[in-house]
Length: 371
Ligand SMILES: [Zn+2]
Image 1 (cartoon, rainbow, N blue to C red):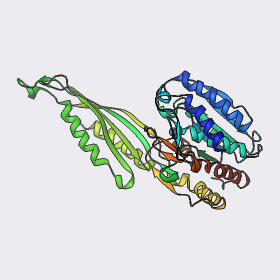
Image 2 (cartoon, protein in one colour; image 1 turned 60 degrees about the vertical axis):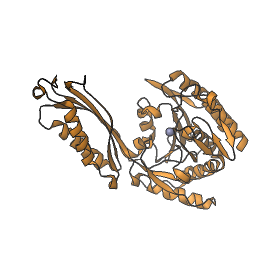
Image 3 (spheres, rainbow, N blue to C red; image 1 turned 90 degrees about the horizontal axis):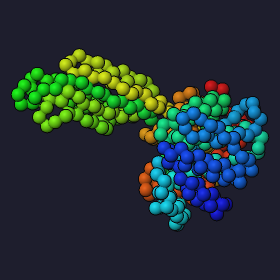
Image 4 (cartoon, helix red, strand yellow; image 1 turned 90 degrees about the vertical axis):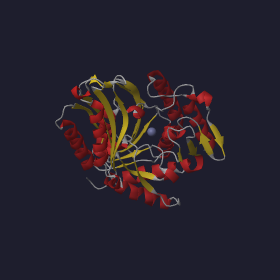
């Protein structure tokens, strides 16, 4: 088992798949299709998507069987081509390192091996997209359509620290605030200018006051730019804000507040671009599944499952926002996503396989109560 899993992981890591490189992501799809066929005995359906890489889908069970479960993952990574040659996959003391192992090529294998354990009549879909790391613009519709027919979504992203499942994820909004004032000579007639940089600085301070970190709401100024020359009152300034919210209500109200701040009258006009990018995955979307997972883990003799609420986003946010019960972090156990030391604990990761097949099996037999 360990050898087979490791060899398959190496094959996937070597098929590098940076999101922006469509050809590479497609080639990785070819590799994944072959690897998946050898594990499950079935070739995936290849679904072309407009403006992005194709998706791969293994769909099992009767077409319209009730109680279908969606396993969800992505094959693109944040690593440019050539990284695997620079830092080849390496195993050491039960850990495997390499670009994309934790986020999330080992997770895809967990899904495939879980399928292989299940009775082929169990209604389950494994969907693998190729644009998650850049916001899932081309795959979003397909993900939502598949999630809509399912009673639950299990997302195969890497676990939180120590193998914890992810029961909640914050929502994400991004804003660009463009300030337009009036330029003037800073020495001769500064009073004739309208300083866009000063207005932007006020906005930074006002944004800080919206925050409520104690309830999971942060507003972080991330990028700023202003001015033309050292002796000119600047007529333009641009500010970027990154907003994370644990609650949907907060995400909406911050949106209103930011627009109201920008609309405040003054000599400098402020234009807002952007808005809500991903809704939060709130805790109740995961509660019932978390309980099931804990029970199966107990039955399998595993140590008690932990869970965590995290800041980062994934496609779990999309599914949870549709009201479909969603649990994330079911893939690889390890750490260092998007970091050079990215690693996977091979033994703990293999333990995910029986857990996921038990979850899917249990859901097929005893579906969640209707929402
Ligand atoms: Zn990921």
